[in-house]
Length: 234
Image 1 (tube, rainbow, N blue to C red):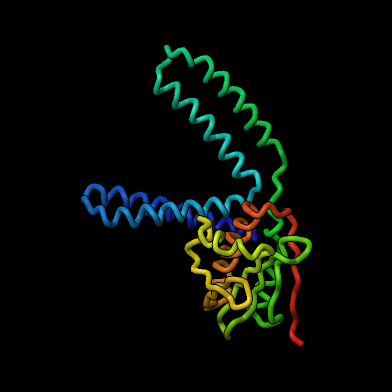
Image 2: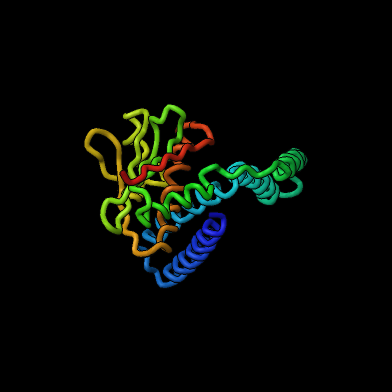
């Protein structure tokens, strides 16, 4: 799955560059309506890329925050000038944060356990109809989980079940998944369906799963472990 993630990262980085160039071009042409749409698309792409980078390296969010702090203090020095009374304070803070970054980079990367060959294999088995469904449990009591099954010959349905039934409306607004158009399921849960044209398009399903898992884990304060259950043909 690592190579799949690298392919996704390359794709999103290319799309971000393309849309940014498109925004610059529309600015020159004064096409402001198109710019507004592109800015929303750019923000969503960056959010999705952040989710995938976090999936690849669990240190990514903290590394990003630390780097942003360094840039913040450097910007303050530039804005206020080298003669500023706060210059020495900012330089001390930069050195402190740089040490924090160095220590963080020496910590061994712990990939989120979703990035496993087991999930990869389960998706392919579902696509090839070796199994009828599988569950990804995100907490030990199995009350928060994802169910994947074949809704039709070439359609895979992802259903999300949350332990706290009041959380569904909130998660719909979460930046990583708010554009997925999750529908209510009678009796509890929310779901989406995607058409799978061939085995190569399973990559899209993996990307959707990563976004949902990251959203639940980052907000729901659940542990890093994920439990996989295959549901075989009877």
